[in-house]
Length: 441
Image 1 (cartoon, rainbow, N blue to C red):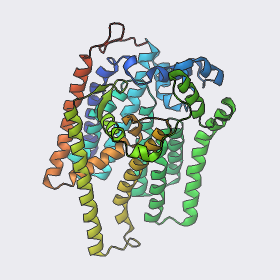
Image 2 (cartoon, rainbow, N blue to C red; image 1 turned 180 degrees about the horizontal axis):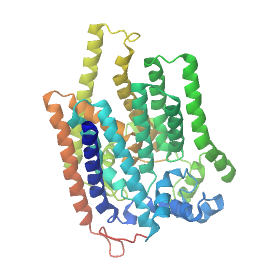
Image 3 (cartoon, helix red, strand yellow; image 1 turned 30 degrees about the horizontal axis):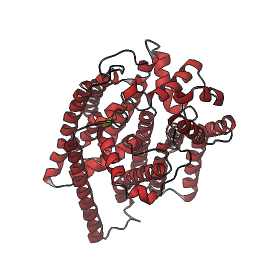
Image 4 (cartoon, helix red, strand yellow; image 1 turned 180 degrees about the vertical axis):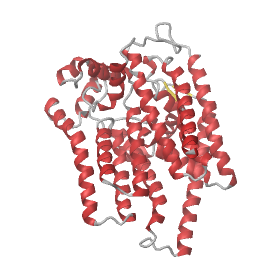
């Protein structure tokens, strides 16, 4: 009982700080400074007003604003719900609360994941706190978009996978997992990076908990069937509505190319993207905090500091990995007998696979002109990446825990400084300035 009360107090405090941090941004960021918010707004406003998906004719009539109308729209469910439950004031502002509440789901998931994977309470608490004060995440949670919903769903899925690895799979968990994966597929295609990591987690859980081959196939069919039932209808609808465009991306690219006068057929070798230093520096910087339309940068020293934390975490993670392997070798661990010893490594492996696939998908997308170097595309692996960062730092001996606390404190300072910087940004006379407003559109 006392433990539950402690958790409740901690979680309530985190939730309070979450809203305290983001509400000033929500009321202050102009729509013209929020990447593609006008396009996100067009989709969720249509859904809120008509309670259905837009047709091909309506998407075409939407012009530049309707460019996202052919892509999966279920990432806007939080925004539509908020607009229907609280239909007060400007919908463009009210819709932002959908992103706000979706972002809260990810932070709460991070809290419970931290409790599951870290033994030291302060380190476990640092995972949700880093998310609360993560400058780029604060920015993204403060305007209407589907990225924040994808982050929420992948965060819930990761927590479920952690529980499955620890306690085993049940029919209820299989149904829930299939539903979450299906909803993720209809939210943001970057969330598909979660699928390989989930499959590895399931197969490892079968091994750890000695699930028979037949039972394992049954569970996989339940997950796959629920997944298909959740999202399959949308892809059939897309093919029928958009002339065989299964994913809706072809329609989106054609509208985007016409609107911004970009080449429709574009291809760059993946190797060129991998060797592009500007690409990687932009990904790194924009993961931590680049605002506006990738135009409002923080001071360069801040990005170098974040890079320092990252390099130290990699060193700590490598050290922990080698220590673990040596320990297993010296103890002659037989994983066929002590299968539970694989649980923790499997969790970290799941996180690493998600981050790797997410980054690889971003590289491939950049080579095909489907998306550039933008940190928000890493939101599906937000918790996984930050957990690896915290885990790596905490393995650097006595100084490790202080480094983790230092990262939390650094985020607090940066997010406050970023808000002050944006509020004082000089804008053209004809443009809406940063500052408190209740009308965006």
